[in-house]
Length: 92
Image (cartoon, rainbow, N blue to C red):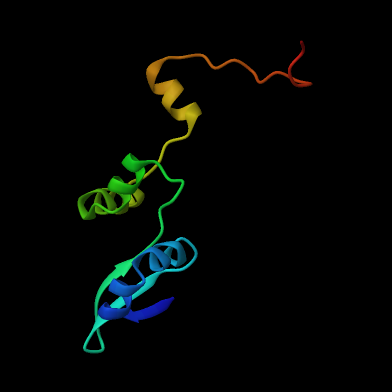
């Protein structure tokens, strides 16, 4: 993690953005953190928006606490018969 003062970030903004792709940059004002810049290059815009949304993160945490079901359990509840997996991989 790199820490830079606001003035330095303003002077070197393009360089800071490049650096943020490799490591988080914390921006300070009078020695106190006021912002952070983290790289998202190569990520989908929707994924970036979702993962930065506090409500989405809370929904993920809530869902992680819920019990899970196996595919077999779900199939049994729905009355679906699962096929046995193929042996030997794909042919073609």
